[in-house]
Image (cartoon, rainbow, N blue to C red):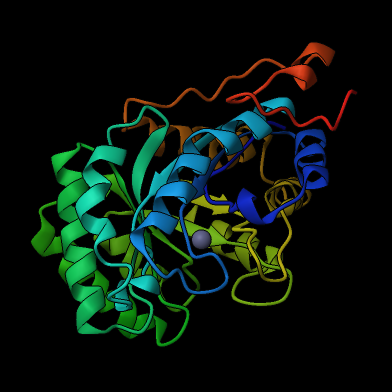
Length: 287
Ligand SMILES: [Zn+2]
């Protein structure tokens, strides 16, 4: 089973996670930029983080045989902090980088006027840079949050096929499907969406335009949830081809719209462990 995790925050994960993901079949992933777990206090904090998503993290992933891409944005939560919003002015130069396959994650957290401004500005950046957009839907007040998100998307002029609406569930599936956007589902151990519910959604909706991710982050989460969905699909009577469409071909098709995707990466060799990124290796001392 080949797996492309289209939304996972590897910055918050360990090397054991990378090894386990490779063993489970993960060969490519997209890491959207998000918050640090505590508030950032200046745009400079974003710059170091973006540089790490463009440099160090792809290097670390490659050591484990996994191709790493990212999406960059001012995240919905920090769009409310005036210490952070100047990063919007610097985003254009970051969006030119080869490894950036979408603008994201953008969207609503608490549905404030500041979030309106940041969302509209960043959808415009996606248009300007000919990139797709990864749009986070709010975890509270989901239905109202999606309605407002879809209004902003319509007025942005960004074609729906270049947008994925993420963190969907049963209450938002209908409106999201009607919008023509791609449908993202984040599978968590005990909140939001689980494997059994995902299988029921796939039975009703089918496999078209569906992206399944583990969204693994600072919270209780599991980077192998993509594999669990693949196994559960097979157990529920879906074919290998169905699984391949959801877990590989759909994310490749969506992010491929950036023209920057390189999902194939050779398996790591012993020599790769000694490689360096800007003079830094993952080895310690004289190993
Ligand atoms: Zn996320």
